[in-house]
Length: 127
Image (cartoon, rainbow, N blue to C red; front, side, top):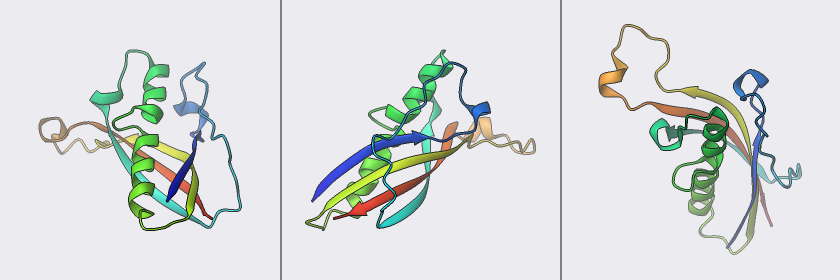
């Protein structure tokens, strides 16, 4: 099996992207995919957060332990571990929020680690 990731495309709305941030772009956004997979990923805020919003945004994609790229690579490796074919994919990052929400009736700060929650669509081609 060969895994061939083509990167993460940042498709977040402009109000969620820090001013001056260069959005990540997938190197090959092919559309002749075999399938797509919609996933919700959780990224521990303490792992990627930085005083610079720009750096935090970059870390969300590229953190080697828990970033979007790492999690998607791990998912693809696990899902396609039994094929002798090449699995090529790119990821479209669509939403960004946190796991706390706006529910003031619950004390999340005492029992929940704050995480960023991202939704992605993975475009997958098996050949």
